[in-house]
Length: 217
Image (cartoon, rainbow, N blue to C red; front, top):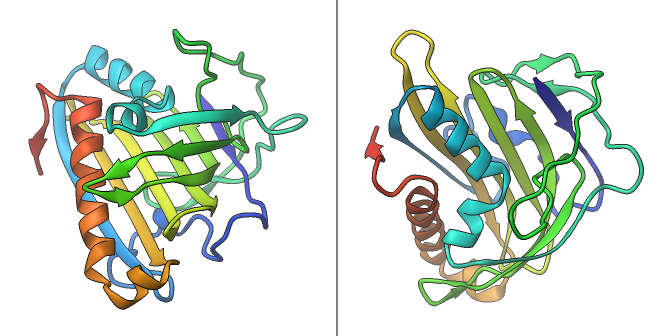
């Protein structure tokens, strides 16, 4: 099991960790548009492990057509403070050290406190941003990654990506939750662009993690 949470004032929004809130869809952070979707990926341990590794190695972003650049681990030892469980409750930190993993291109897997840059377009709209890894959770039946915007994006906010493996049904699910607040003048005057951008990102993330298996909630 690995858990870690990083909180820092350099993110460009106030509600750090709000994607864990069970009532996000009813009570999103001020000025933000919330979004949530969940898909069935299949079943079994192998499907869970494969999807979890894909999630932490930036597959969702890359296969969505976005370039992942300048991935930098946190300076010094990663902070392993309070994290959250699937219901949004605080949990004790893990004290064990975990060996850093790398993908085939030598890019480190996601870890708390990392920063990275994304660049690209989604349905003709900008998807450039600098992001910080707010938290990473690796458990026997749950892998969770939370990213928050630092700057350079047309929106500010947070994304939560979760792969879960149900002990009773053996079902593996991929869930994405997010909230976006418009930064650019265009997005403030045309709020529908925020929802359109988010809908396209969700569709691309799903195709990235498991094209042949995914079915809707």
